[in-house]
Image (tube, one colour):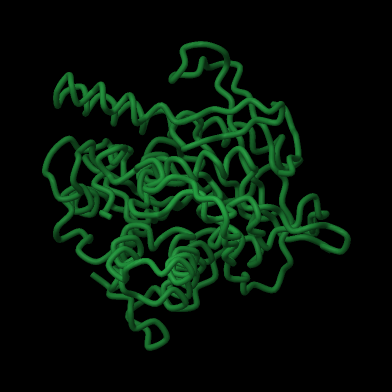
Length: 407
């Protein structure tokens, strides 16, 4: 393991990794524009009692060849967020490196978003680079996996939030899946999924299914490698471990829960659990959906996604014995469960984009309500199952969050 600190729709039709080109992942819809100063939208500040520190680490799995290149050992980039003892003298971490920002600007999941108009590298998170960690007690650990093409930092609102509430949160990038990953020596890994998906489409349905299985399998293997590395990352034995993710990352979290007993609980934010090209298609179930799990899990879907109409979710609930909740965030779209819910309304307003474009991206729910609900239910879930603290929020509907429906 190498350790470096760096400076740095259409609705997705597949949360397991299949959206790819079909999901609306497009190179920037307009050519980069000269002249106007680029917009630098702001993330919402975390609400927990702890300031947040962060380190960016380079991990090398020398026991596994990279499955996308067939060459050298598999390499990962991860961010470790944690409660800091102090953040004095430590700068707020950038959202993306310059190379990652350029890659995300070229290739992302937001059809209609003009390229060259947003300063993605200039956005600042609320995590402070290199701040000393508060080590009074071992802390529960939560892993995070993003959606297909999405950089790990597109989940910053939730990872910073959980760290501010006393968790160590490790966000994982999956190179050659994510739009762009930059390694500490300046090498850049760009997504191979658009070209792989185009080739699979030419070959036929079986090839597409095989690509989806490969994408999910690589992500789960990445996750299990990070679990292996936890004692070195933390400098101490890991306490309870949970995981969550959005879209393909939600699939990854639930499949890893099924495959690895080291994960105590997991949350899936709008991720289908089958190798299909539409969430509502029957068949091609993952093993977590086909067999269920015996540990706690949380399903949070956008409008139209719950166990009554997503076959893989229904199978999971019917075949497993683990405690669970199935929640719908009314007015949410697929990307509502990412930083897009806060960043894109600011961009749309500044660029005077059509209301329909914004609704396609993040639905109709106001950003502050969407963020508050996600923060509250995700924190309550992990507090209950990693810390044994139950505030009752998961017991039934709450007037504090009327947008949440219990299915």
